[in-house]
Structures are given as structure tokens and as C-alpha cells.
Image (cartoon, rainbow over all chains, first blue to last red):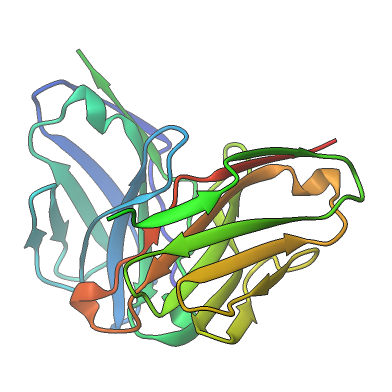
Length: 113
Length: 115
């Protein structure tokens, strides 16, 4: 699975959009980009994933560049409860051993009141 | 719907003792996983299972054993605990395939301290 690079920390004002970047320059054509977050002392929570098109769900939007070498997770209206470590992961989304997620150290997003 | 449930949530062991962590999921998932997370680090995969009666090694399997006798349960065993196994352990589960369903659901974690 390709490696990812994320800034160690970011701040965001409550109510504003939080834009979390991720670089994955060695991503392969069949690797998906996944985002998870981990609120302090809890298990990681799935947010969103995509292959090459932009994706949106009730939690966030995922913007993937045309060359797929980077992506941005957007939380449109950040709240204090969005303070967490956000992990960007790339992997092949098929069954078997490749289901495993390889976590990096992620980005600590601190939402400020 | 309880999702993924881990027991116990907290445990203190003496070096050399044995124990078993239990993971139960009620989502009829085929795949189950055990991860460990050390301070300031991401999760590392210990063992995983793609179905009842099958298990496989992950990134850091040494010192651990697992069993999946029932589809809904995945047990993680420490035969002789060592201080290096002090960590937070997360169990997870997922469906077998389909991109739209292929997300992994995690339990709340089990805090293990080996003294």
C-alpha cells in the first residue's frame, strides 16, 4: 500500500470549513483513498473514501486531484466535536489480506471556539 | 445494534501472566481484525481473520495468538505477557467485498498494562 504524508497538526475556527491535506504521490491506479478519524480514547471512525472522483457524504467531502497524488478532506462546518486525529490511508479495496489498513500518525485537528 | 464490542476494557497483568481479549460483532461481518496502538502512533495490525475457522498474521503478530471459532467472535490471547505488550488494543470488523460496503468498524478499545 502507498504511503501518505499529512501535516502533524492544524487549527480551525468553530463553524468554519476545515481542509485537511494529504499527499500520496506513489498511489497506484487501483488504490483508494480512505479517511478515518480517531477522537481521543475512542476507536477510529470511518469518514469517507474515493478512487478518483470527488465524493461527498453527510460527514465530509473528499477532493482528489486529477493526477491522484494528493487529496483534501473537507469538513464544511467544523464543530468542537470534530477535534480528533484524522488519518489518510490508501489501499486496495478488495477482499483478503489487502483489507488491512496501514495507519500513519495522522493530523491532529483542533477546532477552536 | 451494538456494533463491535470488546471485553475487558481495562486490565493490568503481571509479566508472564496470560489473558484473552474478546471481540464480538453483530453486523454479520466476514472479516475481523486485532490492532494495537502505542502512544503517539497509528494502529498496527496484529492478526486478522477472513472467516470462521481461519486466521492470519498481520504486521506485529509475535507474542499473540488468535482464534475465530464463531463468525461473530474473534479472540486475542497473550500466553506470557511482557511489558512491551502494554498498549491499547482495538478490534475491528468489515464486510468481505463491495467497495461501497468495504469500510472497517472499530471497537472502543481495551487498555492493557503489563507490569
